[in-house]
Image (cartoon, rainbow, N blue to C red):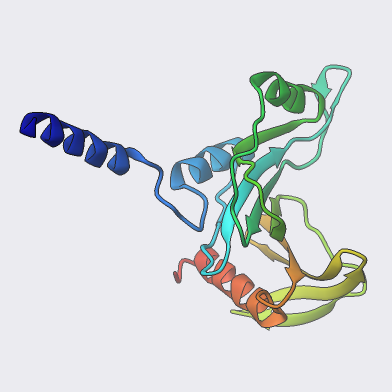
Length: 193
């Protein structure tokens, strides 16, 4: 009986050790896969209040069997309440990849999107934006009211990449949090964190 309990305890401890750690950022192996696919280094900062729920790459469209020019866009989505993994069949994944030119790398987990971060090689700009300097980088920013809430937008360029972050502002995610997230992101890109 003691051996059975000991074996059970050892098996449980091994299973716990093999479980994916609860992390509030993208697993590094997934980040590396995405970097290989998009052809550049990316940064995915951790956040004390939010966790990554989803990561995908959208590829340029295919016309007449050939991928036309255009950037691939890595999208990372953070949530304040990471729920269950939403079921997606292999057939649905193939449909996304072949028809929609999207490939899911992580998730999708249930939870409302609070931060959406898009990374691409295409220079982008915000309409009617203000500018500020964060960690020596010029950042465009703006805010918009919508039926679904108030959103803050930030856009900046670093080396060969453009970063666009969108925040759903609420009681726990403020404009100060959005600036702090972008500051952390820029510092990570600069190798300061």
